[in-house]
Image 1 (cartoon, helix red, strand yellow):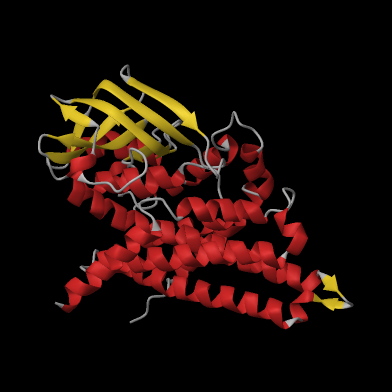
Image 2 (cartoon, one colour; image 1 turned 180 degrees about the horizontal axis):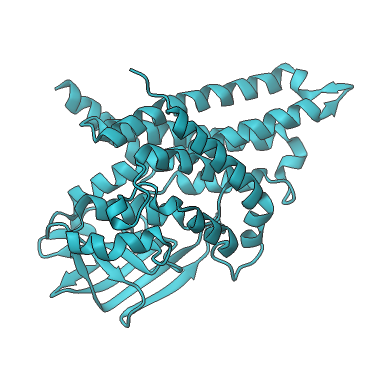
Length: 370
């Protein structure tokens, strides 16, 4: 079985890379990092909207390009390479996929075209602070079509126009769609390790909410959404890890110590080799996840978990070793290494920590072998 991308998909990857290398440089990332008033880079975001990438996996009848999930995986990897400081993942990986998966025809007609044209920024609000997410611990409540409670942290919650919220609904839990630009919703930006991707605490006080999918089916539906998002996040992590290896290799070739390039020393060679191996393991698992996602295979939960675990490990390791390879320079604010380390730590906990995904992988493998 060939898991590689087609020539057209590789062409899309190459063109996306050229575009982002020109339009989303580290200078654009630092504009957001250095300015507390900025939640994202509006210039980069608008150019991505103009490219139509938000609609890559949205069917044409809903205003999208109708390309497919493999094309979205390709775009995700290139966004990861440049640490794009935009709310792309929240809208395309979570909100759009949730609508495609469980939205009614009316919801799809109303919201998917707005995602595709960039007029709607979506987010997903699940967490209520530290601890596992379970039906019995959810404090946010849905009653008579209104929502009350608090979610924290919510990625891109300060700039999103709409949110998908997990709430207690009777004895179970449901997912609901909430327009965040209404009375009954208050938002407060919060600081995190990674300022180039904004986060917020969102409070609901009698806010109007619309059911997504079946009532009481929130937890199983959330698992399906997270499986789909996990593959896309894995590609974003893979892009960041690949760029870290390139940065470390380039520096090792040019940095001189004791009359020779540091890349000639065995210790540096081992670092680069270890980064390469972890990256290739992550790539193999990400490609398997892309196949499962694009074909809606029964193996998707297993493939998504494997991709997520491998990609989280690869990006964290590559970002850490990139700093070490740069030596004393690597720890400074002026060098870009720490930007990748920040993003690696953030992406590792989106849609569940590595420990959560390792448990999911073990459970999927056990179920497969029963």
